[in-house]
Structure formats: C-alpha cells, structure tokens
Length: 475
Image (cartoon, rainbow, N blue to C red):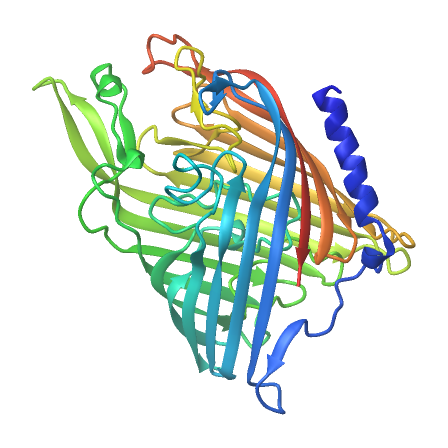
C-alpha cells in the first residue's frame, strides 16, 4: 500500500474509533472535574488536570534528511507531543500553589532520556521534568498578586502564555516562545511576577515579571558563532555563552472589551467555542541586556570581534471569540499579532517540532536542517493570524471547527520572506476534553543561493508537505 493511502486509511480508522457514543456528548461540561475540596466551603481545594496529545503524521522531510544514518525522504511517524500532569491548590483564597510536569516531543526516533535504549539516546524513556512550579500570594483582591518560582507569567504576546489544552490550531506558532529551551525551560524561567486586574470593571488585565534566565555553558551549540561568515562580511549573532545571565523583564497588558477572562492561572485560552464574548487588544514585551553576542570583522585589525547585544521583543495583538447565533450555536475565533524581534544582527534559528529525523547528509542538506525543521525564530518582523469558525451543532457527532492560520516573517538572515500557512479542522467529541485535530502544512525549504558561500543569500526553493492528526483527551 502506498504511504498516502495508508495514511488516509489510518485517519478513517481513528475517526471511526473516536466517533463512538462514549465521546458523543459534544460537551466538556463535566462539573468541577478532578477536584478535591479540603473543607465544606470549597475555598480550600486541590484541582488536578492530566492530558495526552498523541500525533500521527506523514512528513516530506527536508533535503538530505537521515534517520540513524539512513536517508529518509518521507515517512510516517507517531509520538507524544505532550503528556502532562498539572495540580493547583488553594490553601485559602489568598494563597495558591501550582505544580505542572510532564514530557514533550517523544517519538520513535528522538526525545528519549540520555543513555536509554540498547545503544544510547533514542526515543525511549523520555525525561519527566517540571514545567511550572510557583507559589502565589494575593495582595489586594483581584488588583494585585505576587508570585515566584518557575513560571509562565510572561509576554510579549497572548500566544507567549498560550494554554496547550485549547489551541484553535494544531499547536503554537512557536516563534512566540522566542527563547524556548535556550535560556528558558520549555518557555518558563525562574522569576518573580505580579498580576492583576485594574479599573472598577476589571477590564485591564496585566502580568509583569522579573526573570532569571538560564545560563548557557561555553560548549552549548546555541551560542556558536561562525567566523567564516564574519570574515566574509556577514555579521552573525547567537546566544551569549558563559557567565551569569542578566535579569530579563517581561510583561503583557490587555484591555478586555467583552467578557472578563480568568487570570487564576497563566494559560491563555485559544478558543472558547462560543461560550464567551471576548474582544481584547494587548501589548507586551520581553527584554534582556547582553543576552546575545555578535561576531563581526574588524577591518582595522582583520580579526573577528565579539560584542554583546540586548534582546528585545515587542508584540501588539488582538483576540476575538464570540457566538454568532443562539439557535445554531455557531461561533467565530480570530487572533492576530504583529511582532518585532531583535535577537542580534542576522540571528536565525531552525525549529523542528518532534523532529522525525535526526541527521543530514551534508552535501544534500538545506538551510532548514533535517526533517521538519524550518527557520522560525529570528531577528525581524513577524505577523501571525488565525481564524476559526465553529459549525452548527450536529446530533451525536460532536462539533466541527475549520481553521486557517499563517506565519509571515521578514527575517534579516533570509533573502525571501518566510510564509507558513496551516489549514485544518477540529472535531470536538467532548469539547476540548476529547477532540481530534487534522492539519495540513506546506513547509518552506530554504537553501543557500551559492552552497559554497554560506555567508551569502538564503532563498526559498520549494515547499514540502506535512499532514498531522492529533488525538487529545484531558480530564
């Protein structure tokens, strides 16, 4: 059977499995969920949430990709995008503790723990690690709270604090987590934060934090500087290595014209499925002095000089989510953002989510790198937009929500614009608590204009396809 036909057969078998009556209620209303009250008032409690996001996909790999040394042009794979456990407890209305741990991006090839498997690191026994671990004290009503620890209260945009349980699309656009697993721990840093709601009607929601980014040792590849590029006139930037990082400052402010959103936890909702009327505009920032370093040719000495540069990311965004008809219970969700990213001259980073490959043939490799990697985080200007429409409710088969999104970036290092469209649909079998998501992405592939001169222009040559199905259940 051809790979494409096999992929379609798997899709239809999965949809048949999940359309049984067990998931046919079409709602995520299951009361308080896994909640344990510690007194009769309900003000002292422990709330537990657990979820899995399972991906199966067909991917046309980037040129020259290999799996354990063997060439791989395309393949099907399966893995755990996320497997998480979150608990939060309220000792009384003034104190909160949040614990969130799990694994991410574990597939057949990679994501396992060091030294696991028969011959070292592979996809087995992924590392369980902490995502959030913070405590919080309410200073004055809903106006001001202070907290600290490993946290997610950050800017520069709504998507920088996105919940992973209720995305409109398949996943995050990723570029909004600009330091992911570089100077943060899966989009979290240690820090002290303040949050609250201002004005009598609570329409201004804010979060600000002073963070302590993770240090990078002198052998970390994220900080490598290419002296060949520098000696040929291209200034290139990367993360600063060695030493104690300076503090980072981050925040996000939004004005809520419609229903007021909860800020008990830092996770921003992707789509409310028409249960709220939300209209927000927001602005945010992330700044760290001397976060990056830059290599450039000193024409006087003919040596490569290294200098530190600040990191500054600023975002302006808008979010709309509202029902459109009481009878048919349709709804629309729209999000759009403009993002200014300064991470040093010509900085660019390729990202491949749960990459299905683990190497390249150097003579055939593209600028993207292996598998599904794409130049996604870098210095420049980025616009992101997505829209979804919740179709009328259908008897016994749940809800359908087609969606579309686009990342459009103009990065300093790329000669051509980066454009990544996504098309898909969510099939809600029990609201967000049980859903299937289908996504198609034509991924741009960039190459050096002259492969012998990697300091030259980088242009888009082609696109390669990704088809992904996600199965999500959470309680």
